[in-house]
Image 1 (cartoon, rainbow over the protein chains, first blue to last red):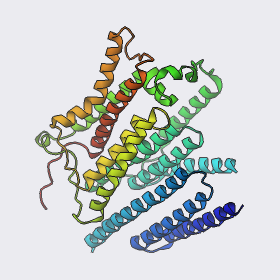
Image 2 (cartoon, each protein chain N blue to C red):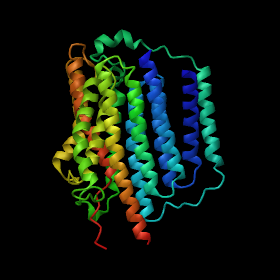
Image 3 (tube, rainbow over the protein chains, first blue to last red):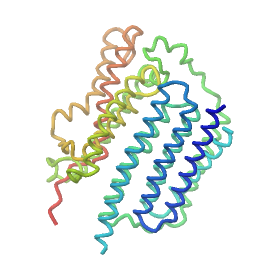
Image 4 (cartoon, helix red, strand yellow):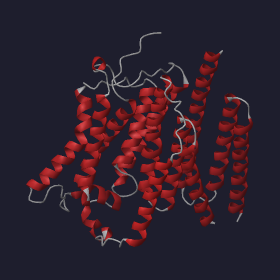
Length: 96
Length: 308
């Protein structure tokens, strides 16, 4: 019962971050602030959703899998955001 | 609740595929194609076809996505990506509609073929995963030809190299700043990907996974390592590289011939030897698939660009 409530609360919180990230992606003016909105919000959003689902996990293996998914998504999103930002920086400098 | 999820998924797949086909711009179409592949993978997972879902995500969305993005990058460099908007895509739409109608007709009218029950034959197949049993035992002929098709595709790509560039390293020169994020990423990710790829192959005989899925993950590892300049660009003339390319089809063919020599028919696996044979063939296939797919993505030999 309490586990279900925790799942609802944390996944809802995760969805709020996803929604905020999406709004930022659409509304922010340039690549860098859009990246900020996307990575920060998605990382937290995915984290809270994984945390929420973790309350439904039956075995330790499922918990570890969830944690691993989040950690790998963090690593990939962080690295890709840096690369996209650098590419955008190079392009904007070439245009000046 | 799950009906709502499935309906939303179907709507998303249709919407994203429409955006990939109808949108203007090559880059946009490629991005929507990758997204489409990921949604289709979720669709396969919802249908319980986890092997297909993995293959779609790894090959359909991931590897093909990288291939298309690379092609788009090349087109942009020669400014060929700004194609004129084609007129009414009527012929393509008509052809697509006709294929859909034919498939719908086949689905509703044709009788379901009386397939032998895979579950009954599974204990003799040497694999606990019915998909692996079909791929490497019951329909091994198809898989053998697929592995050879991959090799033929790579030879086709290599043909595109200019004669003068033939001895040059394969693919474009990648640049990664020595202490940059990509250099770091290219060192952190490969060990994880290596374990995951090998696990997919090893687990594939009993549960979800297999040589194609694992091989694609390993190809991704090789690509990341090459882009981060952890691995040097390979040359087509390297004997070890060529051996890796033909290892899978070669071992597959030899095991098929051995089966015929031992009194069975070509590519038949006797129940006693089936499991080790499948493991050996899958291991060899994985190496070839990983190397072939990675080399397909990086492309033909290219001389270094002259300094500007």
